[in-house]
Image (cartoon, rainbow, N blue to C red):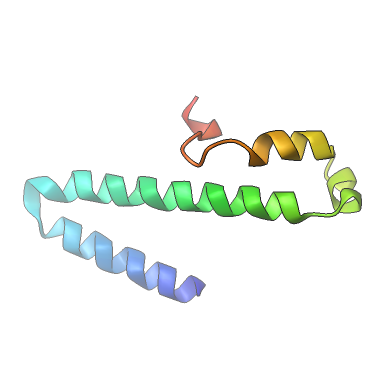
Length: 79
């Protein structure tokens, strides 16, 4: 699966590069969509962790519930 994502990303970058003025915004939009998808996956995976695993990484179930309830577009790196 990871190999497909990398190949897909490369294809999108090549296509957007060939589009001239539209290429950069398309590339940025693609990157944003990929970031949102990863945030959604990470939050879902975090929610599936056991209480023991959460304790090991220093999180409570309440922390995880708050984080996993955030919308996909709420990116902590964009603050």
